Amino acid sequence: MSVYILSRLTIHDRLEYEKHESQFESIFSKFDGKVLSIDEDPLILAGEWEATRSVLMEFPSKESAFAWMQSDDYQRISKHRDAGSTLSSILVKSL
Image (tube, rainbow, N blue to C red):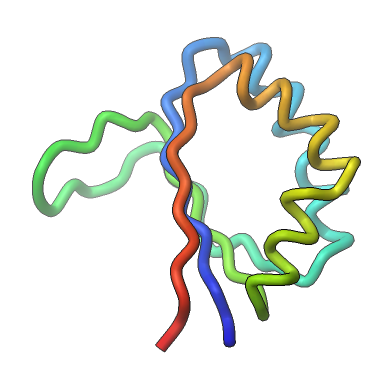
């Protein structure tokens, strides 16, 4: 069953965050996921949206999503994401 990861980020140090971003694709491409959307100017439909960036990714399974998230390579660059932004993220199942 496919799963989706939705992340909301508030970037407070663009230079630090870009260290993560510049290495992201080369690591992500080794896994079975697809980046469906990266948006810094979403249309807010309801409520408040304080994040400065949203990211939507699809994986064929929860296991493949966790394989990417827990990989040594991704853990190595995630320190730059954490230093440059505040992150909220959820994993949801497809129908």
